[in-house]
Length: 133
Image (cartoon, rainbow, N blue to C red):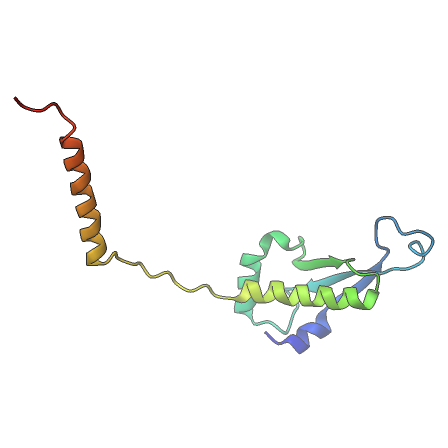
């Protein structure tokens, strides 16, 4: 993954943010929408693209674009920085390869302890019966 190339491929659009705001809200476009075309990207290899398609399939549009929006801040520049950070976080999470799980086995002492406990429980239950006279 080449971050510099990917940064150049990102497209931004400023939109008016929703919600209450007063006189200033209808004049300022502080919400930022990030668009990234996965299929035409040169910053990702084919294997990375395939992995992202598999992991982020539900978050992609029909054309294979990633769309992210941010309107947390009142500043357009801050929203742009936040959406870029979130985008790279999502990409890195999709590209991480999880470790293979190693099957573990209980130790000998743990097996003995479990069998000893079962033996004690069975003796306890056997002694609950009526005494033989």
